[in-house]
Amino acid sequence: MQQTSSHFTKTLSKLPACSGIALEIIRYSLNGELDKSSFFKLVSSDPILTIQILKTANATVFNYPQKISSLEKALVILGFDMVRDIALSLSVMSLLQGQTHQKYIHQICHHSLITAFSLKILAQNYDSDHKELLYLGGLLHDIGKILLLNRLGEEYCYLLEKYKQENKSLMELEIKFLGYDHAEAGADLAEQWNLPPGVVSMIRFHHNPEQENSGYKQAFRNQLVYLGNIIARRLEENFENPNFFEESDPDLQKNLAISSKEYTHILDETRKEIKSQKLILNHLLK
Image (cartoon, rainbow, N blue to C red):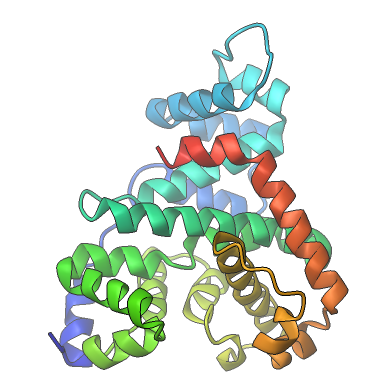
């Protein structure tokens, strides 16, 4: 099963293209150019995405007497920010979905959305100027796992099972058996899609943010993605430990200057966000 790093890098030369409207929505969001007019024009050019947004919008609204049948009505009823988030999530989910190994694909997509919700809360508290960037970092941080599933199939499923059953580091297993890990694979994919360097960095360093050396601001955002990933795991595992933040990574607490009280607050707010987005979450993962 083991492959050399050079062999696997050669495999990555055939990475999938980021097709359709998804990449444009991602880029517009990151550039801060996605105003209502641009958004409407962009989404309307893709009838399938428009239908998906309307289906999600109708699944989200309680006690509304009429069906939401147009993008304009969805913008009025749900608000621009929510509809934009739905469009961005749908776009990224379309990149994450695969035809095989649906159990693992579903788990990765679920975790990616929960991580994005946690990044939304972290951004509100610590970096509101980059909320779209951080939300996207949460959605895309595990894109490398999807790539490895698509490229290696049962071989990568074996590593995922070994990781869960033996409670070992997935990245260590990947490097041992593949000579490459999912963070590097995902970053390489993001580079081939010509995503901004900040997104590539968040993907590459979401397990080891201390290795980022391009500057304090990017390192801080990488730390937030790292923390958002941890929060998502804790909530998915229903792990309750008030001292977890200090015990798991003292350096993270120091670098982010977040107290235990603040960490608990972030957990609570993320739980509320997940609850408020439950219908959207369920609909996106159908």
